[in-house]
Length: 115
Image (cartoon, rainbow, N blue to C red; front, top):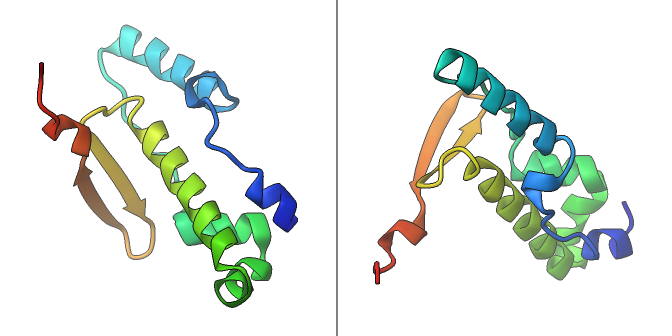
């Protein structure tokens, strides 16, 4: 992915973007049939996803193009948060695969005053 392509990245409309639209449909179907859904989506992590997109140029960007690194990590993080919040609107689960650790962050929106 070129610098121009990376800087053009935006958080997609998760509910209407492939493959999440198909996954959401499958989750809803399973939940309606069995009453619950269990499973795991491998989020891969922010750095691993950035490396998949930009390769070693991503790591070099920490020194040569920090604006690009920040933009890419922001897009990946916000995409992950919005994807998780489709099913769990009050919690954000980040699964770090090695070692396998679950980190739970409370969604800051639940602290906003209710009017």
